Image 1 (cartoon, rainbow, N blue to C red):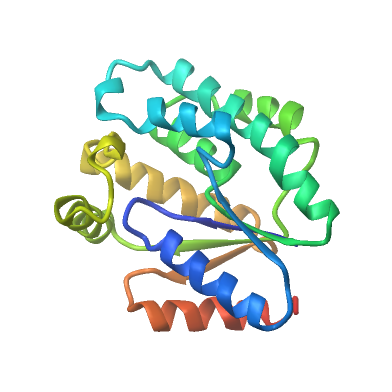
Image 2: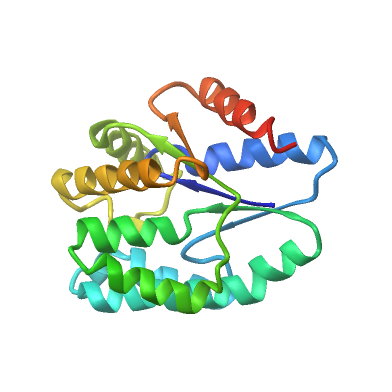
Length: 209
């Protein structure tokens, strides 16, 4: 099974993914946790470029193609092999993030993005996608708190430094995608505490397990 978690900065994806993995492992499911960008050794090098605030001059098209390169490597060297072994793959962001960040927010042609995805994804879509939705002001406040206290690296703050209007476009894009694919998406209120969010995620997964 392939599960993805999506959401703006500070939405709690990483925390929720770890808790969900522990829950599934306790039920006898072998889980693999991964992320985009950076789910492979080569992907980590791409991630360093994409999230570094020093990469502020990176043009949207170059940014898009770096994400695509990361994803092509990720799918073929990690995701597909793990799924073939019968493992549950949980991924912190996947192609939906590219559609909303580079498409809705950066203004690149979403049709072009989807065409590129058809080439590299080979129709590999998640079985379920959890969208942790919350206001950008709340998410960014959380993210900056983590950056300030050192629980997140300051070398990965390029998107946190974007304007609030950028993050509002990202959120609107995610919600539009969720409306367009209601069978795949589960929208969870990410503004609540960790236990409440995890309870919603587990309830939604009950129909699958």
